[in-house]
Image (cartoon, rainbow over all chains, first blue to last red; front, side, top):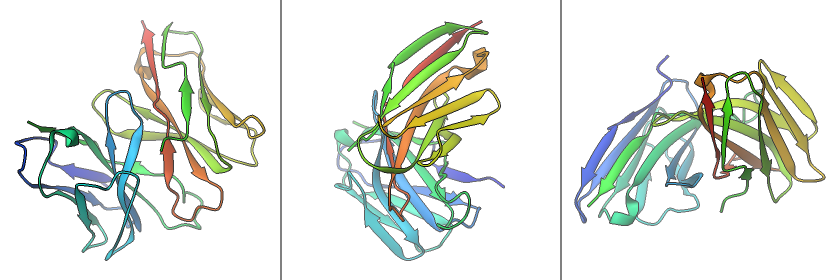
Length: 116
Length: 113
């Protein structure tokens, strides 16, 4: 099992450009999450999904959109990148509530994004 | 907004010593978790303690939870250089079905050989 994978690992954008970050998990998890991590900060939730075809806003959703067309994939889009979106982005997944591991999240390795 | 606050922000010790990190939180929780993040990597789940538990062990890790004080501690015994990493506590609110995690800012642990 690869677990949670993210592509790309690094990206540099100019202000106003768009891009999509891809997260994939092979654990058949229902829930998926996108976080951002800024220096000296913990992780903040951007958007999340509780199943295929569903998404919802987290703590800091402005400037981002997401889609979950397939259960194993969760895409994070930046339509018009801004310098304030320079950050490290992490994807995570977890299994369906009710199992013994229901609250453990599994994280990808991260995408380091710089917006100039 | 962030829920947990770790203390200290940074900790530097020698190999073989014990490392203790503390976490305080604000709300009623279902559980509290500790994650480790090596430099440039994703977070790795270490241990989960539920609100009705007071202490939990996993290998060299010992976690305590005091819900009356809304605090937790993570003890790493006989530390190794490989334990050098950032450690984050994260909480899940009581009654949450989404399992949303609220993270603190982390403790940077450096273990010198």
